[in-house]
Image 1 (cartoon, one colour):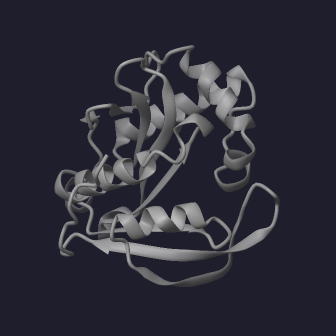
Image 2 (cartoon, rainbow, N blue to C red; image 1 turned 180 degrees about the horizontal axis):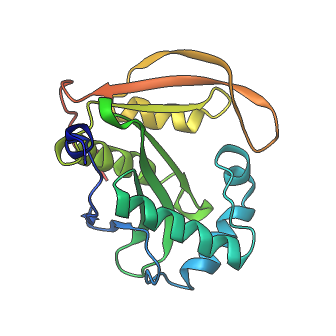
Length: 201
């Protein structure tokens, strides 16, 4: 094994407890109210998720494959997919993830989606804040980017609340669930940036 591969940053499974919600690594057998597979197929059918975060989980087999793929990312340190769960009921509220876009350079990107019942409650902001801190302090990230469609202002607000400065607009940069290439806003934080205060619940 080369020295470069040994020193590459890696995502190591961890559970992030935020009190009323918990970020738990996706893995086969994860206990979710109503079942993890059923919850993912429900999420895949939601119009907002289908548009901005297309999820290949239209049926149980696809949902199981998703979970296996996310668990595999944890095993090799390349993907950090967390289920956002209600800490009391274990209901699935959404998913948040970090993935390396240039692992050797410590460059990662954060993404998330929430089920309808979880929206408008500050959950995406709190989860993004927590995973960003975790990515910098324990996973060795140097820079974390957040990109979202210009037509998705809710994600822009999350970026702003988590002190991800807007760096520019990427023109026709990503094909979303409607089959069209949308302009995206690119936000980013550096490990050397001052860390913002914890969001208020």
